[in-house]
Image (tube, rainbow, N blue to C red; front, side):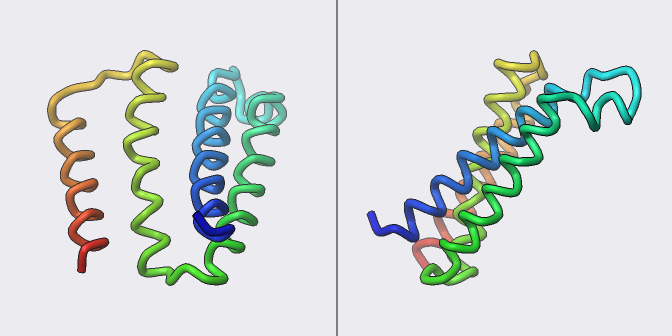
Length: 110
């Protein structure tokens, strides 16, 4: 795997970590409390790091390929939401993510 594909994979993983921390910080009683919650702050830093990694990936991977590839984060978000935050995991949600994944596969094969 090239440096650029590695950067794209790292961007996706880092972004999902940031997203999970942003959700974890969302339990604060006020917006300012949430904004300055350490989990929110680390989540924002991870989001920024993910953006930098994505920029590196875009140096050699076409955007029309790189952006749809990030759809793998929908699967991760579904699983993190369910297992870390006890969010419902119904058939409609699983089916919707399945359709997104199928679309990405079709796009990758085109």
